[in-house]
Length: 496
Image (spheres, rainbow, N blue to C red):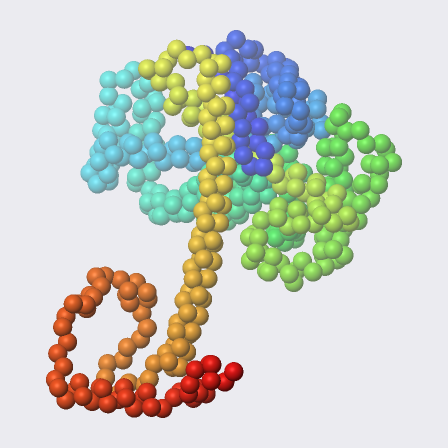
């Protein structure tokens, strides 16, 4: 299958699910056509799955970028963050392009000989680099050779190479953070701010100016209220990350929040009456002011934050889910959870395309789009069922381990009780042995009565001497002369 394919994925609670695969090779790529296609996709998804799409993200490339902008303009209640996985990759490409070209050129020609050769034979090296090329190609090769020779002769360039790692590091961090399908909007904003602060203080003025300009350009195309509110509604950050020049106060923050709230609640499917909306906005403003001032239900947050973090981790959603159970803060908590669960990239679609490359190989190159879609959905279903099965098995194993531990503890207690009882019986029944005798303790029945029983020979003859026989007869006669205690002589007839 060589057709162009578009993937539609939904992200719910930071988990990406593939919904549809669409043939895109015959679709128009202009902005209005793409916008119409996006509208039809959203309507179809909402009708099919009974859900509400609150944000829409594309790769912001070509016609999809224009169509995405038109969609957000025609549907203002729809949140439209751009894909920040692509945005940060653009930074890396722009910075790394010239460095990669120079490294490749040096590897092909050798670094150490060039340093000396350029000093002595720069013109000859430039001419050799251009070679037999003509016209435009010769001009390009000559220009590249002159640029690289000037860089190699520049002491500033070699000194600046030491700072390359420091410049690439924040970009690599940003790329790694923003390509996850669980990236929050406040994390993206903090990543962007980190790169901005780094390059703003760069020792090279040209680098500082160029990078600040590029970062500002990306930030300008963002849905700014979403990112700012996500950072403010992070209980672990709040207003602490904003500089003094931001000139933010509680009222400006509240106006920004109400504006975003009204925008998202303007969805056509919202059935709230005007009076009900006004009541919710009033509750939202009251709880948001208390949140900023750390009063009311949020008064103990500053003191109890460490303890809560030790139990639940540093997770803003866990904090807002706790406040969602309170009537006073329910509206603000629900809205904060919506904003913090918006994923501002399309990492799920990128993972989908990687999975399709695995499924469709040279041996399976006749798989149709519908077949691939069914295979992918079935794969998601298997992963989901496997996850549930593993969770259930872990729960069963934990229950078995607890039962075995309880049984072992019970057996240990019984053994200790038996040992104490046997020890008491030993003290009462068994005489104290002599110092030189070996101590014996009661054993189990298996030890006492197990094995082969040695019986005495009942037919063995006993030998008696004459003296022993006479002594025995004498004892018997004496026993006959004395009746037992309580016995009387004579028969029973004598006392009738």
